[in-house]
Picture (cartoon, helix red, strand yellow):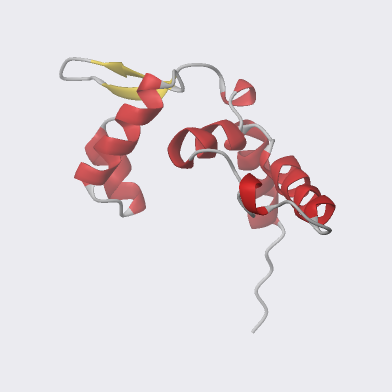
Length: 111
């Protein structure tokens, strides 16, 4: 897809989207194609790319409480929360899209 199409469809400023795509390209998550029909595409299939991979690439390691501040009697608690969050995010982009489709199918509007 071309940057202007992605930006327009999702209301993301094009300049900001370009910065994100450069980071994702360096990490090997997306590939770019030149030319009039060029744009960006996932480097591998959506079932081999996880939400966690994308978020970690863009934001760094997912931490509820930074490791140096975690020492103490509640360390097990913070670690457990992080494992749970990672578990929720460790799904493929394909799984995420399927969940979205199913949620949209089950929406019922009553007036």
